[in-house]
Image 1 (tube, protein in one colour):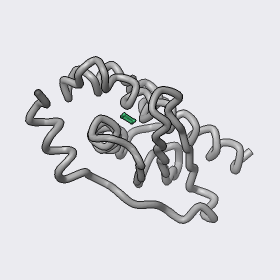
Image 2 (cartoon, helix red, strand yellow):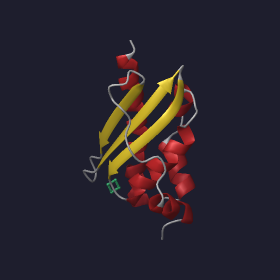
Image 3 (cartoon, helix red, strand yellow):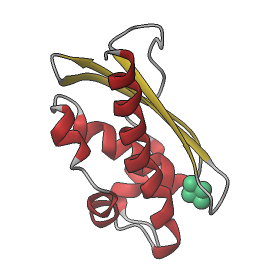
Length: 124
Ligand code: FES
């Protein structure tokens, strides 16, 4: 039922962990899903507008884990603007997420937006 790529990201999630939130260059964003009540947190390290490190933690399902893991691969080394353009639809397509798991991928997109907001707030 699940795609190979999704299983791979679930079994070996990339960039799991956290970054130091006291660091001025680190922005973090936490999102809870209204559908299932699961949570997801992203940490972005941003230097000269480039994402130089990214980590995530989730108390979510395989859909959330694989979406977050793929998201970290996609945005590493990108500019903030490029990272914000990565939409959940892209994750859904590449991971072939079943309909019931689409909301899980939305959390990854929203967590990035929140982490960028947090970073900008800190560096105003
Ligand atoms: Fe809750 Fe997927 S994140 S069901």
